[in-house]
Amino acid sequence: MKILTSIGQCGAMKFIVLVMFLGITTTSRAQSDPEYMMEIGAGAGLTGYLGDFNGNLTKNLQPMVSGVFRTLFNPHAGLKFSASWGKLKGSSKNVETYYPEFRPDDLSPTREVLPYDFSHTLVDASCVFEYNFWPYGTGRDYRGAKRLTPFIFGGIGATFVSGGPKNVFTGNVPLGIGVKYKLASRLNLGVEWGVHFSMSDELDGVKDPYNVASKGIFKNTDCYSTLQVTLTYSFKERCVTCWKE
Image 1 (cartoon, helix red, strand yellow):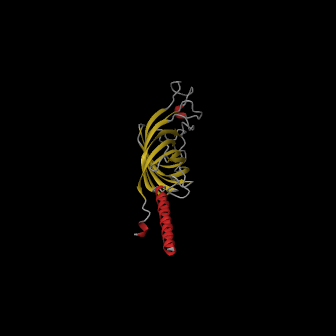
Image 2: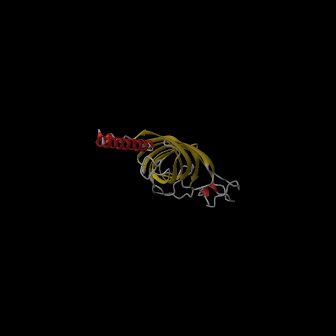
Image 3: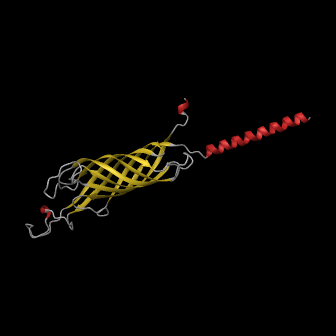
């Protein structure tokens, strides 16, 4: 009888341990979110012209919208592809620099102020590398992941500007900073600010208003800043067992 009782107690203990193990495994799986490899979404914000007729980051800001696609290498890094549409607006009025072609003094043939005003359409396409300072996630899909993380980005892009004396197509180098926050397992909210350094001095429709020719890729060229909020949806779950197959 004692032997049977001992066997019964051992069996009961094994059963309890098995139940506890299954419970822990189930809980662990329930708390483990999948890691996604791609994101798609949209953004909206402001863009501003920076060049010969404006050096103020907050002056003449215009609306812009974007389409966003990301491919993620890991919780720290990824590539972002974006296409944006906006406006570039500026004027030579109240600019401290003296431009002979737009002189606001008695040398003017009409003896009147001759401001140069422009409002052009901007199309931008860019590919940037993003680096998250902290591993980005819900906190359950990657050890030490954070819902909130600052990031930096840099890459290459193309700029198309229309509405001026002639259309301008040129390259640009975007550089910037931002913050990401994971609203849910598949929803991501971002705020980012960047400057796109173009390779052209004609985004405003005027080349070398000093009447002094400039040389070099970025010498006396125009650029534009962007400030936008993005919302993206994560998809394509990363396979965690493919290496076993």
